[in-house]
Image 1 (cartoon, rainbow, N blue to C red):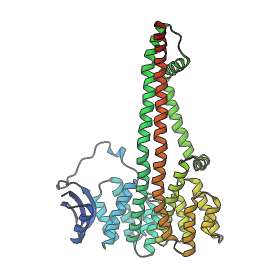
Image 2: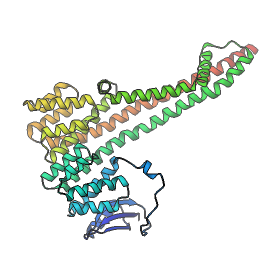
Image 3: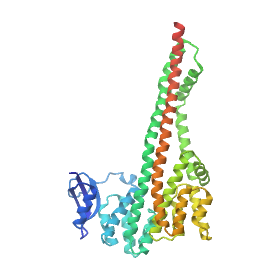
Image 4: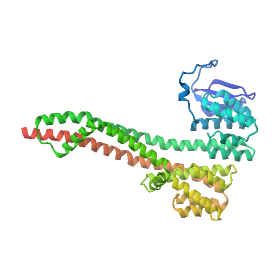
Length: 410
C-alpha cells in the first residue's frame, strides 16, 4: 500500500508531522478527518521524523532571497488557511500555525505582518492589500467573504479558482515545451553545421579550385559570416529580446500587438478562448461570493492579459452603468466568442448568470485544450519540415560540388 507523509493540526492547535499508509491521498484526508485532524499538506512517500535543528544560513543567502510571493506560495497559503478556518480555528490562531510551519522567509514575513495588522484590529482584506503581495481579485474576494460572515468560504472559492487557473495555464505551458525544445535543438544544429562543418568543406573546395554551384557559395558565405561575426548573432538575439520587452511594457505597442494577435490564425482563437475562460471563471467566482456586478467587472478586467479584451470589458461596464445589457454591449464589440456571450445572455435574462458563467468557464477550458492540440498539430510538423529543409539545403550544398567533381573525373 502506498506511503504518504502529512502535516496536520490537532484540535488543540498542535502541528503534527507523520507517515501513514493509505490507498490514495483522498483516503488520507478521510482518515485524518475521522481523527479530528486538519490536514495542511500531504505528499507521496515517507519522511524521517526528526527533531528540528537550527541550520546556519549561507553567508550570502540574503542576496538571493525571494522578494515576492509566487503563485504556488499563495495557493499553498490559501489551501492551508481554508482548511483551518473551515475546521473552526480563529484567524489569529491559523496565522500563528502558518508562521510556525512555513520555512520560506518571504512567506513568514508576510504572515507575521498580516497577524500584527489583524491583532491591531485591521480588516483582513485591508491587511492583505497593504502587503502588496495579493491581487485586487484576491483582496476583494476576502472582503466579500468577510462581509458575508465567512472568510473560510471565500478562501475555499479562491482555492478552487486558483487551482483551475493553474491547471489551464499548465496545459498551455506543457504543450509548448516540446515545440520549444524542437526549435532550439534544430536551430543549434543548423548553427553548428554552418560554423564547424561547412568551413571544413569550404577549405577543401578552395584547394581543388573547382567552380562551385550558387547554392554552395551562398551556404559557404553564410558559414563564413557566422564564424567571423558570431557576436552579431548574440547582439541580434539581445536586440530581439529587448524589443519584445519594450513592446510588452509600452502601452501603445502592447495594445497594437494584442489587437493583431487576435486576428492571427489558430493563435487568435486560442487567445480568445483562454481569455473567455478566465473572464467567465473570475466573474462567476466574484458573483458567487457576493461582489456586485459592476465592482466584479472592474476587478475582472484587471485579470485579463489581452488589452483589447480588457478594454472591451471596461466599455461594457460603462454601457451597463447607462442601463444597457452587458451581453448586448459585449456582442456589439465583436471581440469575445459569440457562443459564450449568448449563453451569458440567457443567464442575464433568467437571473442565473453565476451558474451559466461557471458552465461557460468549463466549456472554454475544454475548448482551450482542443485549440492547443490543434495548434500543436500544425506547429510540430511545420517546424520539423522547415528545419529539415534547412539542414537538407546545407548538406546538399556540400554534396553537390562533390557529385559534380565525381562526374568530371568519370
